Image (tube, rainbow, N blue to C red; front, side, top):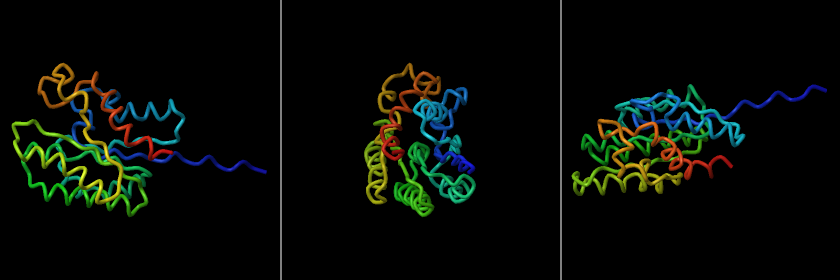
Amino acid sequence: MLAPAAQAAKTILVFGDSLSAGYGIRQDAAWPALLAQRLRAEQLDYNVVNASISGETTSGGRARIDAALTKHSPAVVIVALGANDGLRGLPLTTMRDNLAYIASRAQKTRAQVLIVGQRLPPNYGAYAGQFHKTFGEVARAQKIAFVDFLLDGVATQADLFQADNLHPTAEAQPRLLDNVWQGLAPLLK
């Protein structure tokens, strides 16, 4: 009797912006690459596809989510978009609608979804508070996993940012992975 063929690894789709694309650092040092290493080390049968694009907004993500879902058939989608919406002061209702759309499209393919929240500097005033709340509101409304802040433990440490003061260094990437892992690990069981 022949042994059954090995089941192919499931895919985790990282769908983000420059903070996930590894802007300004080696790709193998970015947190999605570190995620792939951790999955192998923990003998979890997943591969990681990083479909993040520097400069991406939630509107851009909305426009390309269906093609990404079709191409990669992910079991899990990590949505790490919104930072560029906030930095540009785009309407939060649009960001909320786009994040909900991306999550619902992924859910329709039976993928589990994790939304990764972001914060803005306090000089953005009341907008900054509402911006941050939006991620949690979408996660609750869609009944999906949520990480409060991608840059938790990094945002206040200037030495963990590149010269532009926006993009984390390679040294910060393990912390970003640990932040994402808190929300991701329960989805992999």
